Length: 188
Image (cartoon, rainbow, N blue to C red; front, side):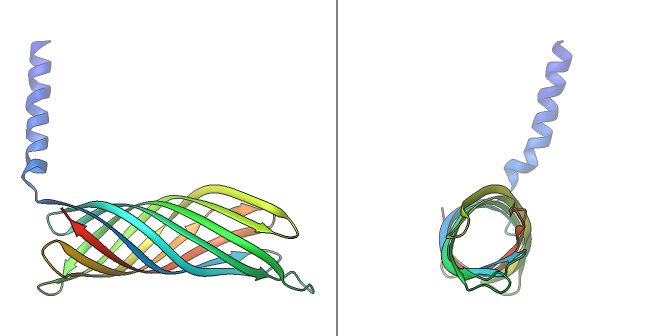
């Protein structure tokens, strides 16, 4: 019993030593951008508007970024059934994402990055013809962009992100979300 406890402690120490030796920076920030949601089904709908987000995470050894993001978008738009006039509708979306980015330095203060995101999206579509339809579904996708270090503690990103969504109600499916976001982060 004592040997197994001792060996477990030694193994834990060996495994955690490199993690303690790494350079880890914590950050928080927010951003604004443009978001386009593409719906498919018996009618054509595209919801596009400003998108807002807050986020926080860590950067490990200046090359790996792990991040949690909350995003919000609300839009009023028209959708069209075959042979019918436009129907007024509203689309509201809350995004909860976990992301990983690999950072590649291309200058003293500039990094390019690419990575993957996954999480959940709560979509609510309201319209005159069919009432209110909401669902929380799995989302996944990727992003790429550029990060510029403005000061020791402040950086800014310009990011393009595509997310595949599983929202489906009746014959309407939210195929995907595209975002272009500008964010500012503060490192602690």
